[in-house]
Amino acid sequence: MRSMHFYAEAWPLHTAFVIARGSRTEAKVVVVKIEQQGMYGVGECTPYARYGESEASVMQQLAEVLPAVLQGATRQDLQRLMPAGAARNAVDSALWNLECHLNGQDLWQLSGIQAPQRVVMAQTIAIGTPEAMAFAAREQEIKGATLLKIKLDDRFIRERLVAIRAAVPRMSLIVDANESWQAKGLEERCQLLTDLGVAMLEQPLPATDDSALENFVHPLPICADESCHTSDDLVRLSRRYQMVNIKLDKTGGLTEGLKLAEQARLQGFDIMLGCMLCTSRAIAAALPLVPGARFVDLDGPTWLANDIKLGLAFACGAINL
Ligand SMILES: [Mg+2]
Image 1 (spheres, helix red, strand yellow):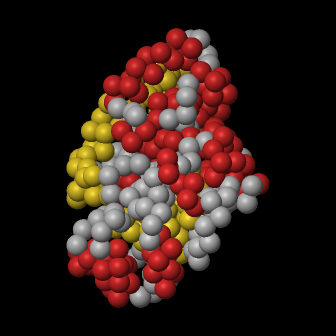
Image 2 (cartoon, rainbow, N blue to C red):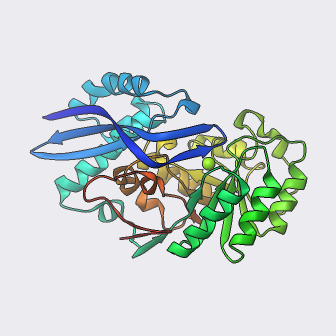
């Protein structure tokens, strides 16, 4: 017999998180807890308005799948019972966690993937004035980060990037425009990024309008984030992007996340691993995707004023496992 509970939590941030789509001051997550044979499994997701999700819509989906979970639905069953997205991620993560506890294994053992000792990850620089962004970049470098993910919108591209590059001449930089650019002028911007030594550009164009990337010759790799949710998207993306950003809240959990990673590699995509604003619970569930990812962007919990108790060991630019 199983039981399943779910509830919402709000985790205040220490600093406002500003990206092209808006500003956040707290991480709003939904937690699923499933119990079976005296053991439990916990999963967490972050509903995302960009994908038509809210706390209420996720709670509704969880209520709908509850009877099937109580009757013993497996992770494989979930793939047809629920659409990809945050709600499925919370249940899928809880079931992985439950399986770990029932088997006396950790997630690495259960997934059959070898754990690294340390995960090198990007630290995010939120949108601000060129001076503020350059200052934040330098601060991250001093604290030990080696890779920065620069959030941009459609304004002050050159000013912001030139200021940042001057502040951190040696750091690896990737840029995320969160769909805020247009096809017009993209070529010049790609050249500017390349000239400044930016290693990758994430989602410059709206997901609904990225056909302009088809056969577009550009000097740096472009990564699909908002355009890529599950392995079903890969065929459409193959001539538009060279990399895909995998997030469990988009794939609907690690089960589909592992499938997406495998298929993406087979089809020649590089892999980036990302996250939403979340606690260590959500990051821990995604860790088996770290080996094989070219860029790891799992700094969500480092934006929280306080993470969960016994969270992951975050250092600046890294997680120590
Ligand atoms: Mg992104």
